[in-house]
Image (cartoon, rainbow, N blue to C red; front, side, top):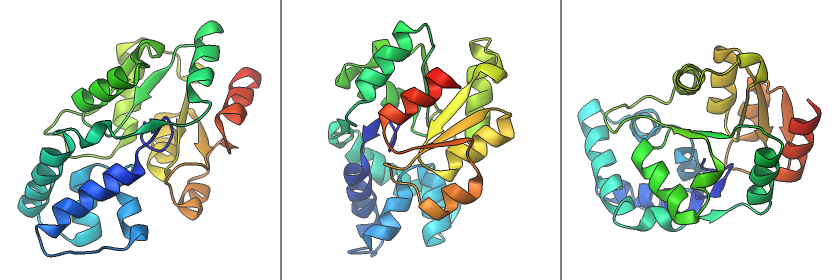
Length: 207
């Protein structure tokens, strides 16, 4: 979702900084804040700042307090994404959102953006699930909707997406317009690369 469907980096980084301010981490570099886009909040606070479980949980609570008060809607859809989804629907392809964002927040954002109807399903963790493991979510989508893995492809902008696809046994498309680190995503070894939604569509229609 973030960095692939929606351009949400600014609000995620801004809200992460808001939570970090509470712990005395002021004016953090953009390069570090960008790493909050993709993984779960708990993992980000623990891995990037060495927060304990309790401290990371408190930081996540502070983040969500501001985020869910309205900041989460301050996002835009990447140009070409709506057309891509419509073309996939017209071609009889099922589209799903598989995200590390809390499920109910993801659904609210998609509804607000007016594109919920373009997806067959939304798969995301519960509020008390701190994991960034995309393979669990991909496998949940496969199981819940009786999908054939040979016909599935994961599209994402971070190595978490590509790693999850590998572990789940499905192909992947790494988009280069999102917030993922280019070196880490290359190292993850996606099946395809796409620089924009038009290239994604070409891959989907010809793969």
